[in-house]
Image (cartoon, rainbow, N blue to C red; front, side, top):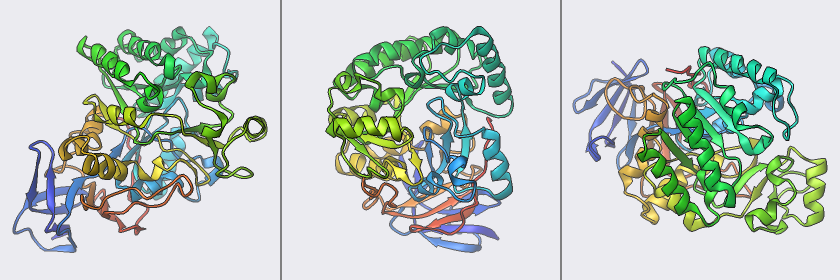
Length: 454
């Protein structure tokens, strides 16, 4: 007997770019049969009129902060599940909220709403070895300590190293390269980076990241290209990435489908001169928490928040919509959320990215065809993470991570005023062979597993 039988749906065959009228059988966490005349099952799911898809994969998000949640609840992971994500990658932008081993220990005990993989963050390691000055380069001794910690993290299952270069502008290229000295040439790993500068600094930043790919011999993921280049030079940025790709460098990028970025107000992103640099003014910056929740800045409010509430996340409405679309449509760019919350406050991308991409950009604006869009949030990130023998496709023998949605109604509902509102159009999520979500209700929040590097 099967554990779950999904009937009446249109199964997304991404490799052959077709929707197949077939049933799907799940047993012991795997997809065991796709076709007709399947055996009886303990649970039957009616997916009539809907697409039965591989679970969505978010290659760039920011995990829970245990110093806030106290391991007693899930902030962003539940939002991930509600928008169809079954596997998410934390530790991005150089920042781990805590040691990845703490997440692994917790998930071994109780599971989680989604599967998690992790980078080890360079900025996180800077703090651990005693360099807390974002404007200072690390010493040779500190770089050696970080390099050894990187090797240990990789040996313990981290997928690679992430950098938050803009968040610590004092880091040198030698430091960036030095922390990888014990993993050079490892093409089974992945590097990623939040660029050094956006807007006018985007193209030199891409050069720097491509250099790291070349000099380390490790594939490179350029993080949230939208917030790097959607200020007037996106076409040039995409052409530059294509040039490096054509030259043989394994460089790809990701982007989120919103024309606003989010980060903490106290970070170096908002250092003096930042607004002039990106061509914005104080009123473009929206604060997200008390005492300024949903307040647009003035010069006085901006300076007060920087000084007295530096951890507060803000939303900067500063990017060009047409350039966001340009990035999302490019064949070297996959879709990712960059989801980031602090006590349920932040940017709606952490709850709406994938339904928004499929609903607004694929269905309504026809930015790309349906299968190209679906590939950007399933098979493409699975391949990048070397999970494509297990995830990213809906085939027999693959992990039973499945998202069932209506392609005619799927759409984000989260707003800047209500940034964790669940989307519509997703009827069910099956994770590791168990029903995790029905409608907007999480029925089993412990199906997710911690995944070590394959």
